[in-house]
Amino acid sequence: MPMAKRMKRLAAAGVAFCACLAASGALAHPHVWVTVRSQVAFSPDGKVAAVAHDWVFDEMYSSFATQGLAKPGELVKRETFAPLAQENAAGLADIGYFTTLKIGGKAVDFGNVTEYWMEERPDHLVTFHVVLPLKTPAPPGKYFTLLVADPEYFIDFEFDDTDPIVLRSAPSGCSASIAKPKPLEDAEKQTLTESFFSGLAPGTNFGFKMASRVIVACP
Amino acid sequence: MNPTLRALPLRAVSSLALIASGAAPALAQLAQRPFSVGGGEGGGGASGGVTGWLLAEQSQLTHLIAAHVHALHGDPAAIWGLIGIGFAYGVFHAAGPGHGKAVIASYMMANDRALRRGVVLAFLAALLQGSVAVALVGIAALAFNATSSEMNRAADWLALASYAGIIAIGAWLCWTKGRALIKALRARFARRASIERGTLYQGAPWRAAANGNGKTAFRAAAPGSPDAVGEAAECGHSHALDPAALGEGFSWRGAAATVIAAGSRPCSGAILVLVFALAQGLFAAGVVATFAMSLGTALTTGALAWAAVFAKAVAMRLAAGDDSRVALAARGFEFAAALLVLAFGLALLLGAQGGA
Figure 1 (tube, rainbow over the protein chains, first blue to last red):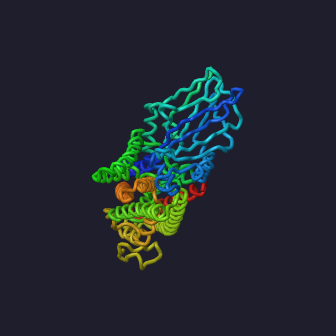
Figure 2 (tube, rainbow over the protein chains, first blue to last red):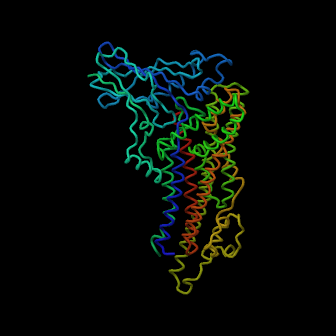
Figure 3 (tube, rainbow over the protein chains, first blue to last red):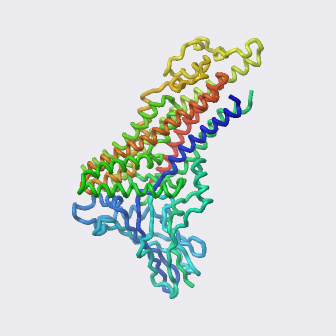
């Protein structure tokens, strides 16, 4: 066999093997599903002061979270959930609160989380409530965006269909709307396909690409 | 000598490095994240997917599992659907490094070429993983009514033990394969030196005289003996390589350690299904679904182990030429794979330590 051909085949074998391993890393998918209802709270002087989330978990994670916490037939109360709520709230900062609030294209910093709880609803789904205060309240500008997503895509966050966002004490004229994730463009699909075969990441934060955004306009 | 040929082991190493870089983002996980399940198996999704469709399909399977568990209340026949979906879930989901695929494949690459054994290892690791999940939820939740946090902590310990095991196996492989590589390098240089020295023997098959140990040169290589590959290659039988005849001996002890290290960390999906089934009063159905998932996982892992063995066999065949070069390529390949196992273990452990 000519050397060049031999080398080509060797390279092909290597690529095929890489693709197999890459596929194994690429097929990750969410394990936990969350329905999001968010509120944006404004301060009396019209600045964005805090984001409050109510996250409702899917029934599988809800079963997991409530396991061992209540007698059969009883709902898990906030007090009983306190340690788990505290555990989850404590980890939020490291992961960026699963929340990106951008004013004028710039992400704001959140301060310490002090208000949070978990409870089991009568339909047995678990809710996590958390208030994320902005480190420094900021004027809303012409518009700002709110994104709730897990960059690692272990958790799939979706805004609630009927009641995704509430603006509290917003300056008059502010309104909110939801932007669904853009379908992947051809170029992006191409990147994904290439990344599949090369085994290199198409760019981190894939979870963000799958997420809906809230857009709040304050003309 | 053709320079591209000389670069062959380098190519093997660089292709493995490529694999490692591809797996790296998926490995950087395991920190204790909010709302984690089973010690924090990350989605690992930062590396994306083939298409959004696949992701949607995966999510669909999880929801279908929940739906079938519900359906079992009224319709026992739903168990067949549950088994089928569990199996499909296992096939597709056999994804994260937590499932030990990368470890098994690398181990096979470093160590063994017998296809059937690779597949057996993959099955055993997947079955162990399912059993660990069943034992964890069965003992912790069913017997002791443990909470999710307590189960996460237990899973954390299992994960850490698993990573420590992977590191130990990687270190052991690096030690043995590193020595074999050095030996092959010496043999290679000795051969070149001897060619440069004299014209008389040029072109004659090289015998291991330059090895400095005349006794081993003509010893028949017993398959499975530690020196089998090197010797077999030196004896000039390497042109039509039988996958099983190549390579360092296969030890069941090493294989068992690999199965345990790769399979002792329970996966989030199985824990969720089991706890959910338990909450529905259908723990047995959860166990059935878990083992269906294990079988699916085993299929994917087995395919990967097969690919590893095959890739190496192809590489060795293509490297065929003079024997010391084949030996060197094989040793280089194996050492790189050994390094990879070690790197997997370290990356997993560091990732776990990061946030725990």
